[in-house]
Length: 90
Image (tube, rainbow, N blue to C red; front, side, top):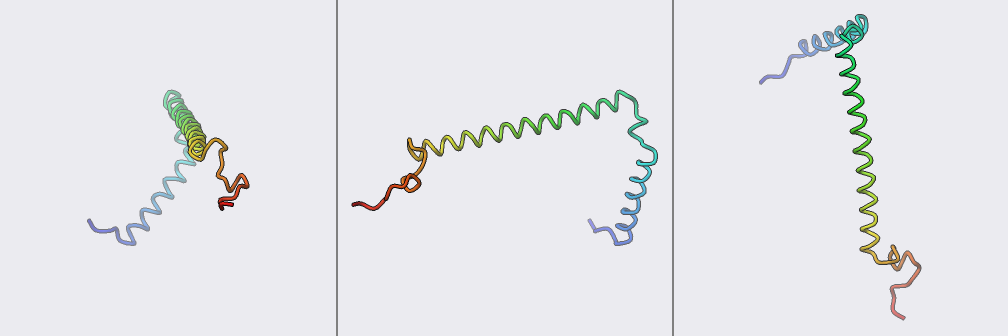
């Protein structure tokens, strides 16, 4: 498949700009049936709720990983160097 010529790309850009300005002018969404508008609003809410849930799960996983790291390092939760102990034998 060949790439579009520069004239075609320019025409496509113009068409997109014209469509965007027409949508602003006509306010297409405002004229949609109430059922369609509320469906879009509901979809937006579901999407944002899913994002919140995903963020909460990520935070919980990070906390879990941190606890696992602490357990792996020992009871003190830090290495001997962090606790101020020397590794060299006296």
